[in-house]
Each structure stands twice: as structure tokens, then as C-alpha cells.
Length: 203
Length: 208
Image (cartoon, rainbow over all chains, first blue to last red):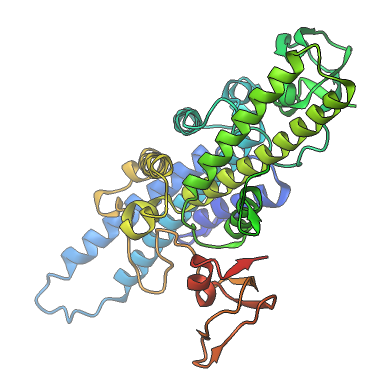
């Protein structure tokens, strides 16, 4: 079977991937080969435009050339799809960043996630993190704007179970050494970030 | 929170702005003064709580009241945080629009504007590194304006519908079909955002 392919088919695949990512609520692996082939297609299209333009310098040419319009449309569409794919990914990355309360090292040390990112995306997250940290530092110590905003606090204290060792933490009751399997009644504000990052679990 | 202005406490005012911000498609004016006063108040309350907790003479009853105050502080902080984050979300979403429009910049605090600029720059350089720099030179622009295609810079959609609740008797507003409409106090209307934009700015309606 010979593969017949139109201009724009690859870009459709790329956008379908974004849609799938939204539908299943997962981050898919960065599709570097596909992005590269679309960029190759863009260069091809640009060359075809230039050669068509050269041909149209022929004195007998009547200025009527629909193929130019088709190339141009394909170029614009491909470019839109490429940008949409990357912007969709950065949106997802930002969501993931906020979901762990802005704990970037926690996010980047996860091998599963790390494997799905392109090197540029890792840079993006690092720079984004530093911008958010600057923004956060404008507020007083009292208010950590990266803390969770999903559930309004009902109680001051919360009973937690330790899932993973997380070392000695400074709390209202003094320092506590959280060891796996132990349970503690602690002030929510002191340890909320540990719940978000999956070290502790509410009982 | 004990201080009051008119019938609305500072906290109620914040809650109103928080709701408005969450419902409005556009970025509303920053409430820096209000936010600053509430944060100051939180800090003072917190200091008082620490002082009372450390005092061995405070009674059982007082300890109970301290706990209530602490819970209340946490809840106020939650609203402040949600308010700040809602704005941050919109600011990032429309960052490139914000950078290009001095009119909307006036509605941002200095910190927010700084963040918008940084974020817009970050997005542009990310696009450049991942896509644009590999494309032929003619295709590298980020602001193509093509007929029949949506603009490259997302803008707030002011035609989005919102529920507006009249807080007082409102002056008449012009509806999209040319007729005018007046809202009585307590009346709720479903309208496109731009119809009630001015009423909202003057605090005559709130979004619910």
C-alpha cells in the first residue's frame, strides 16, 4: 500500500494528540519526530512557493496562480497547529506545577514525568518557577499563594498518616520527625504542602 | 474581622471582589488597598493569637476562642489565595494581550504587571525555541493577522454571559438589540459581560 498524504495531515495528527491528552487528562510524551517532520514539511512548502514565484516571473504569466494560495494556507495551518500543540503542553505543565503546590524539584525528579518532557520544556518550567517565586515573594510570609485552593479549610488540625519518610519538619507543636507508617495530629497549614506532594495522607 | 465600613465588612468586600473576579471574563481592577489591609489584619490577628497562646494565664474558654480565630484566619487566607490565583490565571492566559495594551495594565498591580511581562516573554521565547526558529524566515512571526483565522493573541471574551445581581437601583443599560433595560435592587439578570461592565466597575452590580 502506498501512502498518500496531503499537506496538513501530520499537523492534524499533532493536534489529535493534544485532544487525546485533554480527553484522558494525561501528559503524553513530547512527540519530537512528528514536530520535526512538520517543520520539514514547512520548509518544503516554502521552497515550492519560491519556485512558483520564480516561474511567475515569466512575461506570459497572467498572474493567476491558485497553487500559491494552497501552499500558503497549508503553511499557516501547520504553523498554527505546531504552536497550539506547544501551548497546550505548557498549559498542562503549568497545571501540573500548581497541582503540586509549586514544588518543581518534586515534579522534575519524577522519572515518569521527566521522560515525557522535551529539554525546552524543562527549561520552561524552571523559568516559570522562578517567575512564580518572584511573584510569591511579594506577599508576606503569612500568605503562601502556592498553597492549595481546592478545598476551603474546615478544621485547623488534621490527622495524617505518613506514606514516605520526609524528615524533620518544623510545626506549631515543635519539630516532628515524620517516619513512614506513623500518624500525627498536626496543624493543616504546617504540613499541607506535604499532603499535596504525596508524603502524607489525610486519614 | 471586626472593622466595618457601611454595611459591608472588609472581608465581605473581598468576597464580593473574589466572586466578581472568578465570574468575569476580563481582568478586573486590582484591589491592592483592600488586600493590603486584610493582610495587615491577618498579621495582627496572628500576633495576638501567638501572644495569647504563650500566656499561661489564658483560660480554657480563651483557648477555644483562639482556635476559632485561627480557623477564621485560615479561611480568610484561603479566599485571598484563591483571589490572587484567579487573577494570576487570567493574567497568564492573556499575558501577551496585557503587554500590548496600556489600558488593561492600569488594572494590574505592579507585581502582577511584572509577572505578565515575564510570562509573555517566557511564552514567546518558548515558542521561538521549540517551533519558530526551525521554520523558514518568512514564517517566524508570532502576530500573523490572517483573514478568517482567530487572532494569535488571545483576548478576554467580553461577550461571554454572566449572571449579574443588582446591589442597588441601577441606571439603564443599552442591550445588544438597541433597547435599554434597568435593573432593580436585588434583581438577577443573565447578560453578556460587556453590557454590565460599567455597572460592575461602579459596584452597582455583582456577579453571582
